[in-house]
Length: 326
Ligand code: UDP
Ligand code: MG
Image 1 (cartoon, rainbow, N blue to C red):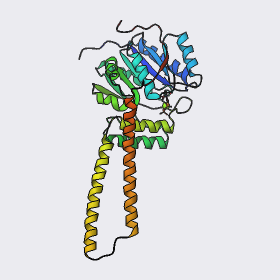
Image 2: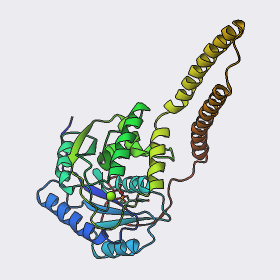
Image 3: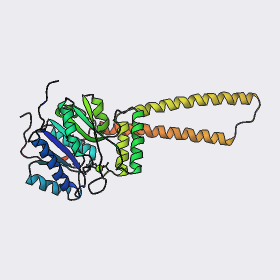
Image 4: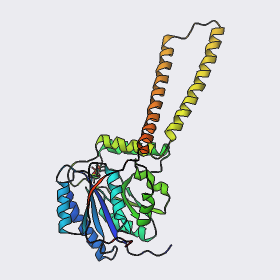
């Protein structure tokens, strides 16, 4: 592996209604990046690129104020709220033209920015992707913690390559981002997709802190969508499982028929009402769940065939930067 140069690093920060934290975040990130520049770890044209995911509060105005005063900050703004995954994707796709490496980090600074050195170490050692994996979940509530653990177990069983407890705190090299840009699917689950690319990677462990201010922008609905997308966009194992369940049911049915015939031949009375009811209900349930799973995939296929844009960029403010290919 050829030796790497000190990278131009872009931090991509998705923001959705983050007016309470954004100014503080901007200052802390700048201090950290300045320290890295002074230490000769990153180039002096490194920047922070905020992605405004259709905020309805003062976030966008605040971001534009920051970018106006200081060219260290860039702002990409969406026309609407397309979600966290789209926001980080858009930020990375913009930043790859200017940066050698991009790190995505949440606006609430729950992810420890002092892990950046470790990300850079791994990058300098040749990793194209460096995953941030959280040390523990002690700042999450009981509900989020247990659902997350269960979810990763389920994901694994269903054949998704997502790393357990990996957050979207991650470094990607320009090469990895170019590879990512080749993927055209509209339902994106980056945590599952990126490991499946197979590029040389490394892991960095980091601590999770409390949110600086404001509330979690991940509503229960958004979490469920992300969870479902994670499974259906990286695996078709649920579809196969329907086939397996159907097969088992058929075997069970055959066994029951044989027993019924034997019973009948022996002159026993016909099985009771309860048995019939249970069988009907179980089968009905299995069929409906199966239909639901198939419907989920069918819907996904339908949405993919439309080839809709993943997001609409309303505006980009990025000053004093130079594209690498110019
Ligand atoms: N976020 C976003 N779009 C959304 C929801 C969240 O860009 O629709 C951003 C949010 O501003 C934050 C990050 O995604 O920077 C993570 O969100 P949050 O901290 O609310 O999630 P949690 O830490 O509770 O999982
Ligand atoms: Mg958070």
